[in-house]
Amino acid sequence: MRYKDVSPAMRAFIGTRELFRRMGFAAGELFCESASSARNNLILSGFLVLKTQGKEFAVELGPIDSVEAFREEYYRVRVALNKGKLKDRDLKRMLHECEAYRDKAGCLLALVTKGIVPPVPPIKVPTAGVN
Image (cartoon, rainbow, N blue to C red):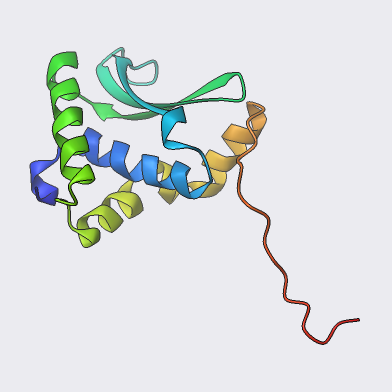
């Protein structure tokens, strides 16, 4: 499966999912859903929904053709990802192109404002030579 074989909304899902995984959220907390867009005149859109800490946080991915087509693409892409059929450079491109990655600070601020704390492991500070 190549980059061009994946719809823009699904590419955004893959990139956004990777960003949230890097923040420390578990794969089981991230869901691919569809709904009418509140910010785009109720156009049918794809969403990544984070369900964690008793809260939900949705990231709009972009317009989709139909719920069924988006669901089918999600399963196809999930199988391809699990089998390693997407190239690393394509996955990296999807991450860098997604809106959540391009506005990481805004995304993190929105999460924290909603009361969701990313489970990022603490940074280890080198202590060599310090007593």
